[in-house]
Amino acid sequence: MHETLVAVNDSTLSGLGRLARFFGFSEVMGRLYGTLLMSPEPLSLDELGDTLDISKGSVSMNMRDLERWGMAKEVWVRGERRKFYKAESDMWQVIRNVLGSREQREVQMALHVLGENIEKLQAAECELSPEEQQLARYYLDRIADLQAFFQFAQLALHAVVGSDKALDFDAITRIEIE
Image (cartoon, rainbow, N blue to C red; front, side):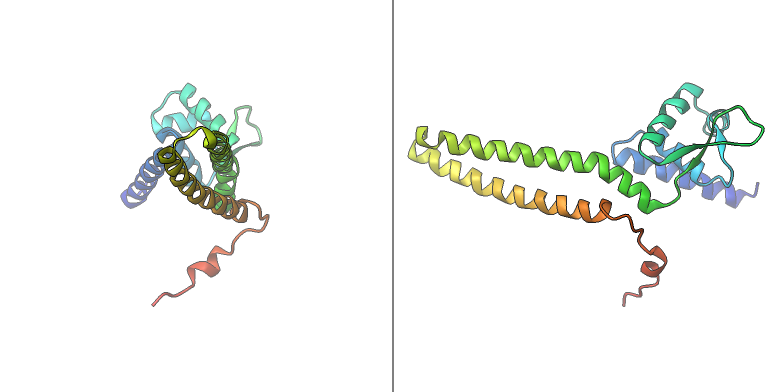
């Protein structure tokens, strides 16, 4: 294969590995996704392991995660008994899958904890000294700001993951900014 193709492929896999690590996934998972994404044909677990020089066990474990996140799927290859995989190439769908599970759950948990903290502060108000009541009001103001932020995040996530329509990325990339 031409050295430019190899360099571009390696750079893409490395970048996706770093990006995966940044978002709390394993680097191997990012590199596996990149390998599938950059392959015009479905790949087997053995091919993935050989390409990335990682164990079949690591490939298998990370592929289960990729499937769970909707980033890859098993595909049937005529005449083959081995499992083959293909990447989800619709980035909009990948983002919706990931945001729809992990981030929405975390935002909901943050809102729940903030609500509990407001209730605790309000319940303890009569037991607090005047100075402590002032601090409690300060806490309530800060918590209200956090609640507003997380409620906005919840709306934004719903706007992103709640729609079945895909964005027209071709139209977006044609926008000229001067």
